[in-house]
Image (cartoon, rainbow, N blue to C red):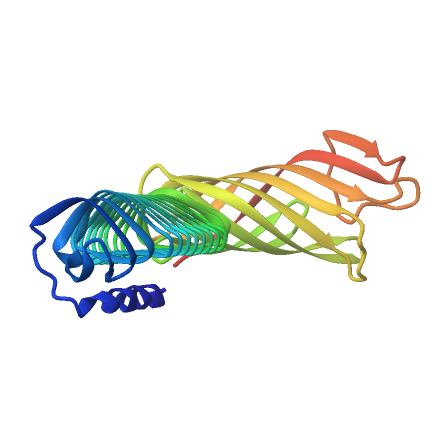
Length: 386
């Protein structure tokens, strides 16, 4: 993304050979074919124009009105009003108003504007308003407003507003608002708001993250929701648990206490047959005191036969566990469990993989090719927090 700033610098370098003076002269209208072939001639950089028309390329002192360019509009001084160019608008000072170009808009200083470009918008100072680009938007200073692009948005200061992109949003400072992208969102500072993307990263968060992978240092308030949510100073735990259907479970937990992911592997037996289980879940933990707490967890585990069998064997559980802390890093827990087991098998000739202790409700489905069992059970275990 730094290449955007380099391209903007190159564009501005093309006009840097001209002595930039404070523009004190104003003209109502100027027309140029290709600088200096125009009504203001070689003195064009001394004038701020109310109406400017550049057939191909125009270099002027400033704008306070409307400017059109077949290819490129360029101004050394401040721009106030509206600019339209077939290829690019390149401004060496501040810009305020509406700026539209087929390829790129470059502003060396701060800008309060709405800018739209087919490829990129680049601002070298602070920005207030809206940036829209087919490829990328880049702002070197603080930002207030919205950025929308087909590929990427980049800001280096504090951001307040919304960043929306097809691939990536990057903000190196603090961020307040919403980041939404097709792949990744990155905030180098603290985040107040939300991130939605496949991969999300921020430092301290007040808000939420929704994605495939979420990474943060701290969650001061709010929760992450994803397949993997790692919070450096969050909730990490390993549990060894046993229950009435799956006799041994090893659970790994990541996230924050308000909402964490559960990764499960287990062992079960039914007579001489032995099975392994693996599954995923979500949970929340409430602390009533330093010693006592409660966790509520929902999970689904697939039952794996010794010989691979593609049939459905899925154990769904809702566990409510009362917890007692043994110091800072160990918990004992126990509680009831509501179980819903879906087993695809021939109900007349085969038994289910799990040894169902009893069933409060049994339902045959698939013309006798599967059954659903429901029962209340219990589980207990020990947890190591780290």
